[in-house]
Image 1 (cartoon, rainbow, N blue to C red):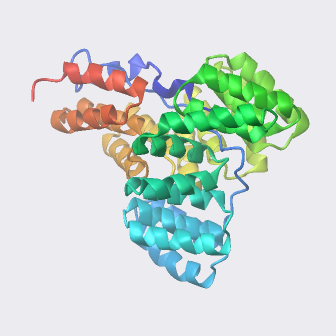
Image 2 (cartoon, rainbow, N blue to C red):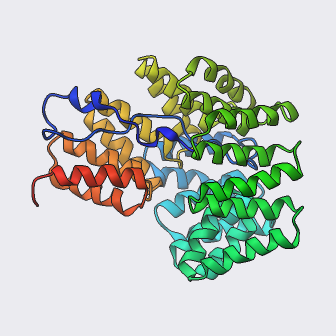
Length: 396
């Protein structure tokens, strides 16, 4: 579920520091719940080698993680989780050639592995190999990253209107095809055309009212539209049909967090962890609840646990760095944000928060650079905040 606390006003943060920030410095985003796993994700595969490699990545030791994984992956070509992780690390270094080889080896043994196809799509997009990116993202569907990747790739190819027309035509030609309506809805949502996405997902729910996936999709876009109560209704219907749906349970917990009701949210998040003990989303959300309760040290322990579970996602780094920043542990905050940026260089929140951290310490030129990086990501809320703060900095 999309985070509504994406850029929450938290004036207490800057006001609480000892004057290192410029007078009138704008406010910083507070930590918040993360984005729930996509509908099609399966249970997390864990093993000693994978856990050790993840821990090394989280600690900034990419070379050590690679040294652990390379011989293991060579001896266990069917361990897809290990292969994905090795490719992920190569991609972030970046060593695109090695990442491609590792991921292609996975596809050779598991041709229908959607998560790996999505990774290849991202790799080809980063190399401006647009047609190959489109092909891989198409093969990754119905992954959320695949839909967003397709929109981005067709934009770059210059044929986005034609792509959208093709999706519209598919719904007219086969009006009772859930996949056609889902494809259209996800494309519209990726373009932030939330009302159009809602209409498409409404058709999908009408065709398969007992299925969980369409209801999770419509709940997500309802949150985009700030209709949280209606999103909760959809998720509860989903759970009546599938009481063990991890994405639905996590999203339900997050929906209650959007309503500032952590007492109701917490049991759902605990239940999610019983289903997926290392679920990154649930771990970050529970950490956020501890933050709300003023127990930031316990919150930090949950954020670190989330990073160990999946060191290649940005959410836990955001909340971890925020807590360190709030308690004046600036070097630790910088380290958290920089590690997050190393795995998600296009995340505007990370660049923005790193800029705030630099600004609080009087590192004005470093702050200026990160505000510009935040602007370049194109995230509207982040861009507005970064633009406002840039205007307050002294001339270069």
